[in-house]
Length: 335
Ligand code: UDP
Image (cartoon, rainbow, N blue to C red; front, side, top):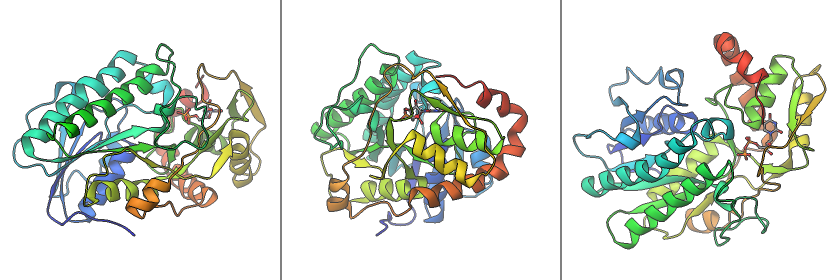
């Protein structure tokens, strides 16, 4: 099952130079659409879209969605992938993170209303906070600390969902909300501070793997191509589901299990090094994906080990090319 939009649409991908956004731009071009990629390059990178910029159907706009410029011509679809997503990066400018998800999302929704475009919001499993219900289904309202250091992202994304559902209820925009669980794969920033990129880069640089806390906390990891399939399926689903949809891989692993897999793949990797657990770090995370399966016919296909191998292969080529800028930042990453 892979759903596609009718060919020849104009698709705006905000955050299009970021990790997931860049894959979405590639996918939309491959399907024959015109792509407008908008990015402020706060965490997105020109490298991820370098091979797209000379493609005839690709337009790049350097802008922040908080100060959205006028966009001329028709727009049929808007995928909003714009927001720093790794805890150290979204906490670097927390007010900007919050405003991206309130002012920025409202700007995009007004644009969608003006153009008659369908709108998909990349929400997050972070709306469940440190969950008291396991696995997390869309009906669970979450357990978020609204004054903690993760709140700029968690509460920002919750506000963005609220905006989407208000525009939908008012019949102003056909909005769809995907709740993304941890995603990994090619195009991640080596220095973005997340677990998969950190562990793989540390192993490839022959450095100890950093484990925050005991490493017994769990996450569920979805390979990026599976995730993009789910986003497109939700965007192109013939009727509005009028509910958020979880997109993630339900396989659940402790951080230690993940580190052990990486160490098996790179023999000779030094021992683990334990560091303090970041404040409000969720203990468990696993999506209930029954709704995505039933409505969209979507479920992930790539198992963790296979996805890690693909990701490692990509980082092997990427790391030497960017080593001088990134090595110090990965080594000094702190919770
Ligand atoms: N983590 C870790 N070592 C690292 C980076 C992250 O042990 O070098 C832990 C982090 O504390 C969390 C889990 O791995 O428990 C996933 O972290 P990540 O930042 O990738 O995503 P999120 O916390 O947003 O799910």
